[in-house]
Length: 83
Image (cartoon, rainbow, N blue to C red):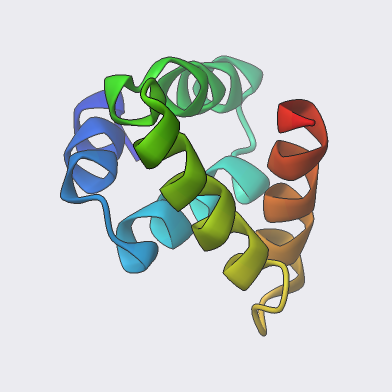
C-alpha cells in the first residue's frame, strides 16, 4: 500500500478504510513502508479534533474484535498509544 492510498482510505473516515490501513501496516514486510503507514495513521488530520478522536477510538475498539488477528493487534496497539 502506498502513502497516497493510505491517506485516501483514512480520508473516507469509515471503518473499512481504517481496517485496510491497519491490515497493511500489520503485514508490511519493508520497515520503511511500515513506518510510512504508521506516520499516516499518527498524523492524519481527521483525528485531530475531539469529536473525530472519539470516532477513531470507537472504530479502533470495534476493530479489536476483528476476525483478522493482525488487524486486532494493530487496533490494540493504536489504542494503547492513545491512552
